[in-house]
Length: 436
Image 1 (tube, rainbow, N blue to C red):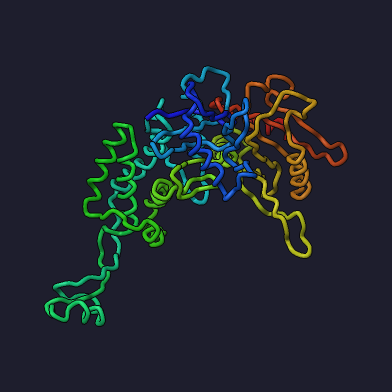
Image 2 (spheres, rainbow, N blue to C red):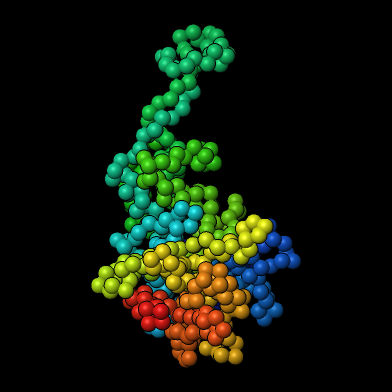
């Protein structure tokens, strides 16, 4: 089945030309968009898609969500980040590679994406890569062995064990006194977590188009021969146990929800005929910058300047108002502390800047208000706004620009991070040190 590849903010149009989809598929996708978040026909602005008009016909504009959408006939729409790397991006391979690198840093609602340095992601559709990530976690589980657990059993047995259920025994065994209707807990592999993993493998065995993925799915299913497939996903998910003995299942349960229950990472996930795995790029970008900046600081062991610095993400320690009680928590994306004092605040913005001073380079006035409040509430005059670099920013604000308030010394620095540069965070640290 063909996959249509789009980038953020591109249009999905109905038609027969290359890059368009059929009217039937368009109508299904349009219906999915309108149902997002229980929105109405009048309000056509869901977070991840927007219905627009082009040449008198409706089109669907992709917003800042990246991932895969699958229509009922198996047709998939793959959405990639709109990043320019200053080099050829033939077949979207480079863009896909960078997105996957960023995705590794995602930690949304305790969901951690698998590492995939050993996975073959070249030219592979995102959906198949997501399957590979799941299989990578299944392999880790089967290498150490499936966990057994106590499973509640209620049955009409020929042997007596556990507790006799008197009323059921009378009803079922009035003429079969050789039997006992009992309940007991049995230590076995057929626990809810294993049932859900097996069900996910069976589901993906029908969905994958990759020979390598299909071969691995079938190989992993052999480890689950003593496990039943789940017959009630919701009931089994409610019985999932989280403790230090079941850490191998954490990622697997998150993926199982994605595949079995259509629980995506978008603002809308529902039991519709259209399925999606969508990630909000502002969250992906924020997690990526925080994790890579933390790693860069740790790596700079030869530079005594960074030896006492710590990087914290989503640091919420101040409120806009303290009276009558703390209200409106102010939570910068990233703070950098030295000797337990906040010296730098960074906020990430997944937005495309423009090289036009008259438009304030596309920097939102609301964002500047937010940074001004951060500086004053955290008593930190050194604020940075981090944007992804794009090919249009080749003039005055190519990589870095500083705005200063002469009255109180507050500065807001605009920095464009080159996502295609392997030394991007070393370069950022050098700039932070220079402008300290």
